[in-house]
Amino acid sequence: MKKNKITNYFFEIGMLKKILHNGPQCAGVKRTDTVAEHVYRAAVIGYILGELEGLNGEKIASIVLFHDNPESRIGDHHKVAQRYIDRKKAEKKVLKDQIKNLPAKIAEKAEQMWNEIEKKSSKEAILAYEADLLETALQAKEYADCGHPTLSWVDNVKKYVKSKSAKMILKEIYSTHFTDWWQGSKK
Image (cartoon, rainbow, N blue to C red; front, side):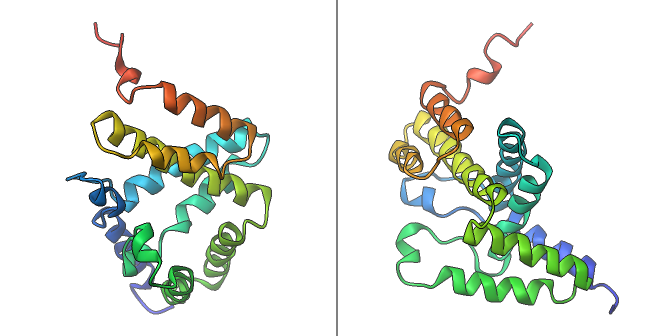
């Protein structure tokens, strides 16, 4: 393996910390979350969903960790922009270019996980997709609680989640203010 290839991959993935989700900007959010922030919370959600549903939480979290990596090269595209580009085709091409310098076994596994969530070809991949959606719903609710017109984004997620646990969490998102977590925690 050529020197620095894995390190370069790590630096590239670091770009996700700089790429802002641009959909919320359409709703007037000035400082949106980054793709990396989204992926982190979605991975935690994926792990917990998996455990709640009796599946492999580690596998689900791993799938989520790789699903948005191509955005390090092509950025985030909101739903309006996605009408004009073939995002899936572009992301697949980016993924292949990104992982070609990783050890073959790792590259193969990364591609497998990415394909799995794209095709929703396993129970774990379906939960990884639901974790991605739930994270989006949580973020949209936070924005809505701050006065932005994003509650309909939470409503949209309702159409896609199927697992008992994801439905339960989504229901709780509606009735929870994003600051409730710290209420009563002060000394």
